[in-house]
Every structure is written in C-alpha cells, then in structure tokens.
Length: 173
Image (cartoon, rainbow, N blue to C red; front, side):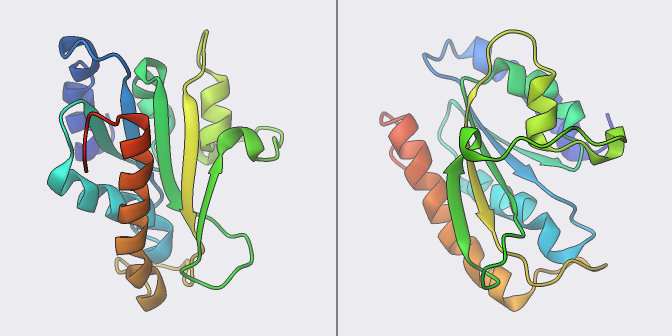
C-alpha cells in the first residue's frame, strides 16, 4: 500500500470481524496533507484516534480512496471527513448524508477518484455514509492548516463524536 497510515488500516481491517460487532463503523479522514486545508480530514481523524472507543475504526485515507475500498466494503456505517469548497466562509462546517450529494460522472483519471465514485465500485450493498466537511481557506502547497480551518478542527471532532454516539449509543464519547 502507498502510505503508512493505510498499512495500519490494512492490519486493523480485521477488527470488524474479530470483535463480532453488531454494527461496523468506520471513520475516514480524506484529503491531501501536502495541500494545507485539503488535509483537514486527516488532521481530524488524528485527533479522534486519541480516544476512539473499541469497535470504531478511524483511518487516515488521505487521497488513496481506492486503496481503502476493502475497508468501505466491510463497514455498515461510514463517516467521511474532508475539506469541501461550497462557497461559504472558511471554517464553516457542513454535515450531510452522501445520498444528498449531486452524482457527477466519474473522472477520467484514477488519481482523481472521489468517495462517491469509489463507493460505486463496491459489490453488493453500500454502507450508510455521512459526510462532515469544512470550507477551506487555503488549498496550496504547505503542511499546516490555515488559522480558520485549524480553529474548526475541535468543532469537527465534537460533531464527529456526536454522529458516532448516535450510531453506536453503547460507546459514550
């Protein structure tokens, strides 16, 4: 696999089956860490991982969406976290079900596959998908989040915990 975080995910992917969970919940941090605010999903997952209840798998997918298909396939519920350019004020948080997103034709390159396109490749049933997004301020080369997006990270983490608590009430977060 391409990145160390996905290697960790690959080792951890058996946790769903090993724990015999009633509902398999996956949190996927999406985005490119090398493009400042575009990597916010990965930053949020890193914060969530500091205190993730047993039975909830939080992974740094980054831009390797196709490499994470095996994880998406095993999940019953998927919480995806990413930067989203919707036109709002930088740092604005968006929450919606993936079924509410406009379905656009797939891109020509596999390097540009988004979450929705990747999920179409899954055989059989699809997981229930919730997306948490944040309006980016700076999509440019760099490793740090812009101040407004960095300020939104704790709110994104709190919202992710609320979603996960609704999905798995036995796990108080």
